[in-house]
Length: 225
Image (cartoon, rainbow, N blue to C red; front, side, top):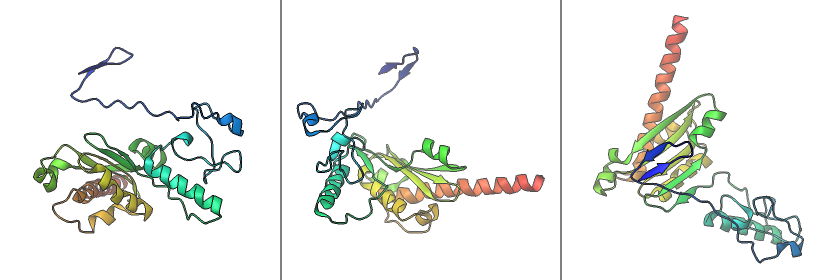
């Protein structure tokens, strides 16, 4: 398959993923009759509890925009219901996983590598390719990988997975982010063998090795100066 870019560049590839995004289904609802307005993206703006500019009207799901996930929409609806009933919904987590049920599956949670490099002074990326994992060979599914984005203080900042069971595996990374896991959390603990989850440890070992090398290089520079 050939893809021609605007500048004339031609990219030849075996597979192409085209993401067109989503639009809210507000057509015909006449929300303006209820005193609501939509923004330039045709979305209804709400606060963290789902309350719109009209106090007694709440909105949740795709009509309020990203992440536009079924899981996130259900949580938005729960929080709106709690607010209506005067109940405490609890603290809303910042770590919402994203899953794309394509072939292969894709999933992520936390920040991207690009965003992390813009935020933190030092970033290393640990990889675990499924062809390195015993379960990948057993399941005849070696086309995939797990990526850990790790900052210089050894904290896990993002997890990105493509391949078999990516949308299931991502929840381990989500729990790690919620609990403030470091790269050592995945290095020093045992995962069942053979499983895809073992990829976390392999990727963590990769990241830890890079951090150790960076420390050695810093020491060498300091000693020379």
